[in-house]
Amino acid sequence: MPDALRWLLDRLTRLVQTATAALEASYPDGVAEWQAEIARQIARYSAASYLAGAGADALTPAARVAITQDIATQLSFLAKFGVEIQDGDVWEKGWNSRAEMYAASIKAPFYRGFTRMYPLPAMPADGTSQCLTRCLCAWEIDELPGDGNADAYWRRGKSDSCATCIQRETDWSPVQIRDGVLQL
Image (cartoon, rainbow, N blue to C red; front, side, top):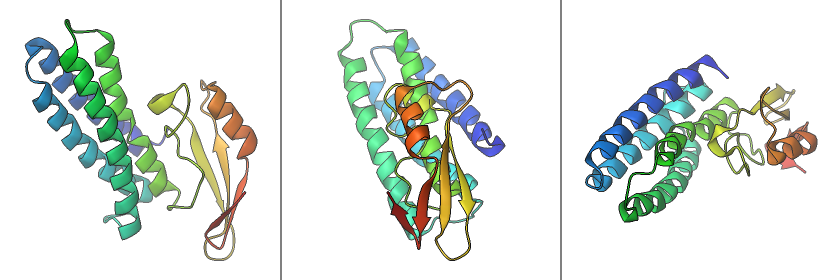
């Protein structure tokens, strides 16, 4: 995992853990405040993650749209999770680990930036069936001559064995992008 992504993940994970510990201590009160804090941090760190992956100082309009969609997806999950917490009778220990998955969701924006917004079929930690946001896969990009030309390889992490990631490695090593268009 790239150092910049690891650093952002560590920081966001600690923030999520702190907010979740505070919620657990005040449970059943404070769910709305917890959701608002997690949502704020998801938005903040998703943008920072993209910028770190891209090595950029500002979001392009296309990046802003993609990141907004990533954030909206996570906020939809967060809203459902908040209802589950609110409706619970007691604090469930699994909720702490589940909350930490929101920190790991910044992997997708990082790889959008890292891959220069190439039209890839999916991002690591995006749509994997079992590892979800804990996915350790990455894209390896081989830039080719000409604008918008590359071969991209889905690379599994050393400990990844999710069926989706295994299939992606088989199907997407490589995928070809020519003139900015994904060739499938």
